Amino acid sequence: MTETMVESPFGDRLPAEDLKDAWRLLDTAERVDGFRLLAPADAHEFFLGLAPPDQMDLILGLPSNERRLWMRLLAPDDAADVIQSADEARRGELTGLLDDSAKREVASLLAYAEDDAGGLMSPRFARVRPEMSVDEAITYMRKQVNEKLETIYYGYVLDGQQRLRGVVSFRDLFSAKGAAKVADVMKTDVITVPDTMDQEAVGRLFAQHDLMALPVVDAEGRMQGIVTFDDIVQVVQEEATEDIQKIGGSEALDAPYLEVGVGSMVKKRAGWLVILFLGETLTATAMSHFEHEIAAAVVLSVFIPLIISSGGNSGSQATTLVIRAMSLGEVRLRDWFRVMRRELASGLALGTILGLIGFLRIVLWQQFGSDYGPNYLWLGVTIGLALLGVVLWGTLSGAMLPLVLRRLGFDPASASAPLVATLVDVTGLVIYFSAASALYLRHSPVG
Image 1 (cartoon, rainbow, N blue to C red):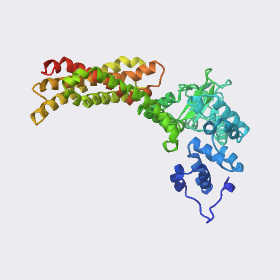
Image 2: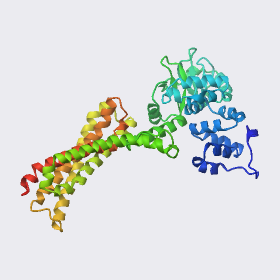
Image 3: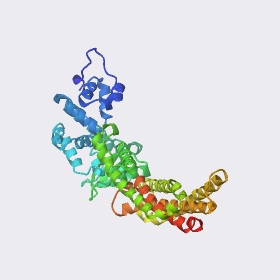
Image 4: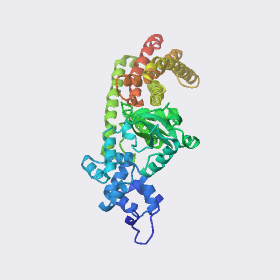
């Protein structure tokens, strides 16, 4: 591999840190040129640290005699990620760079959905038989080290049908008597994941049990591979990023921000903006319904932004907290009543706090220069009760909408803060002017 490296015309190597800093600003040809100026050890580390799409671009940009070396450097699960990053037309070209054994392993991984445990796992793991002695197992595991195993901390005990019977660590083997059987040393209470389990659920298992690796089994209990902690770190980051982008009112980006074209960016953001805009047009409809109230007391219009923003903010808080709790597995559909009860109490408390502040704002401003008329106390009561109602409604709707979407089979993150805010804007106006009609206008001379 070192023979393929080239030096700059001045005989200097390019520092890896310099290439890393400039990477996002370079096109494919410039990246390839920079990569080939790295020292061999730096190139190896730099390549393995790239994201699969960048590895794919780099491999395809290299001269044909160098591509095979770098493609075969990847573990099967990483090679599968690189192939999945390529267009359909070029996947065969990348697969052809692998040796026959790796091709079979990668083909089995590509048969799974990209976000399933089977698509994340590595098929290379240390395996032993239960009838082996401890000395035989240690010798056999040492031989397997040369097969580029994903991890050697654990040996997975399989029977003749490749079903998982237990797990044994190197530490357990070295501390046991050499003549003892693996079956007597192994632990049988093994946490496994089905090969079809969603990657987000796999991530939660790692967090709950603090494990280095999880064995992946098929429906018959046959072991297919392992998912390691470093495999899941990137998945957790991707899932969190996707949720945050959706909560912000945008489709999830499929590449780093600076690498997404302007056209693609507009396409991913325009849909939600149009939906939210159409939703906000209902606000104008609601206001037109209360034209008489606004005309009778123009002062009511002054407080519209205060009312609807408070409802939107409380709804955004609630939906963000519930979505995150659902992502972490802290809240499930069966917990809907507990969530509603908690948010009802929270909404009442928060609404009362803001309502009192709103009431005091009217009273104090009246005393220090503003003139809200002789019935300013009724205006204050109206503002206070409207804030209580809007904040309570915003909190409840923000908390319940993610659960409703999950029940309907949609992504809860689609209950974005902007969507909740739009919903609360419309209903907030109805609550506000209904309170104004029942209280302020009824006791005001203009009513």
